[in-house]
Image 1 (tube, rainbow over the protein chains, first blue to last red):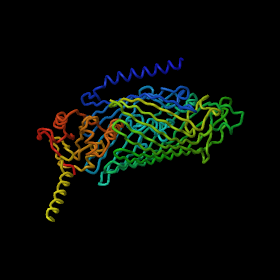
Image 2 (cartoon, rainbow over the protein chains, first blue to last red):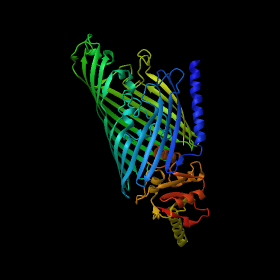
Image 3 (tube, one colour):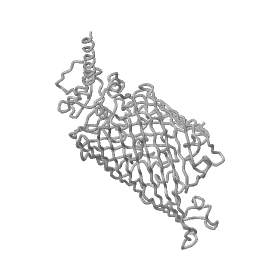
Image 4 (cartoon, rainbow over the protein chains, first blue to last red):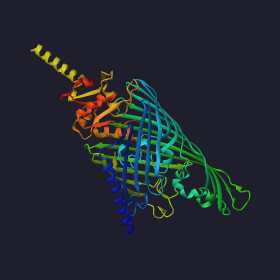
Length: 427
Length: 146
């Protein structure tokens, strides 16, 4: 009963907020003099069967999927634009979130050179990482088909890695008769928030003493045909060494635990990570339909240097260091058809898999792969108000929620389903 | 008889050429601010402007796109006949521009009078209207679509 009341309260709260916003912005976007303001608000409902996708989604469904954003644009000079977006996002308790308002981006875009053939811009500040075709719009419901239909590449587990960085991005465009060639290069510092970095491993937080900041280097090539119907892209992202010092961690929490003597109960660990992505993207659009596909190959190298017995002995015992290489492959192929001005349907196939040191891994059953078919519709039933719905038929539990008592070995199911609804408004 | 046949073919060819190069194709005219030196524009370039892919004129002036509201018949006609795109597709492309922080949202107007007023006032602006309404053509430049 209490559970149903909670859900009702959430739904009512959402409707009130939405109504107020609709009324406030009924006339469209605000132009505060030279400052342009736009925004969006969305509320989702997630129901899963078989396994838990986010908080209690398998027992009555969850409304813990709320996103809201407001963005500002100011042009102080014809060649300079200041862009900013604030974002608030709740996607359950287990994942990286921006429940409080976070700065999604804030940068100056400076046009250094512009001619009939060449355009050269520089972006400086907090920028969205050049990562695939959808990273910079992944949280905005109106900018892509479906709700979570691109999760195979833009998943919740490494959200903080992909999202944004503080740094500089060079954007060069070369326009030819056959289309536009675009090269983006980025150097940025990722968030140094421990909470962001270890959002999916929160159990480690009490033991983490220090984390080095991560630098990301990205290179992206984009080709767009002259009529805009074909878009091809290659992205390469390197996330430099992240050094993490973990102190006095219970042995059971370490991946080394099974190979350690029983005398050792706690560990000090120095962990170093290096990650690299290669992403190929393709989009083909015609008036009534679009086809989109992306493929990502990722490598994460980790090295653990552990020390045992630090809580007992003045000089802890050095344990052999362990190297680990995690490789993952993800891709999706998705087709969308526009039935009329209001309604668009889509179907997609998504796949992700991983190995560690060339071996399949099974922390929990079916954990090394995930394949899913997604079917859904987007319905803009009133201008700027959109209802989306989609169903995922999933095989495998790769990157499923892992917490004590949640999706535990005895309960987990290989084949499961996720149903999502999302109502969104933009101004 | 043969002469008449040749004459008919020439007339058909002439009509086809006029309809391709005329600004009045589909009854729609693409217009720019009076200060613009642009007289003609390629179809692909026009599409790139009206979908937010090109954001500056060659002289560095920011492009200000003016559109009719997306539910209006004229906008749907413009998207379909001139841009060869679905209005929904065009709307999404502009949302990407706005929310990814890559450009300015187009100005949206409700009628042709408002459209022409915006084009007249704003430097670097580009818009469209149905060519069969009475307007003062000294307020803007009509450009040819190649």
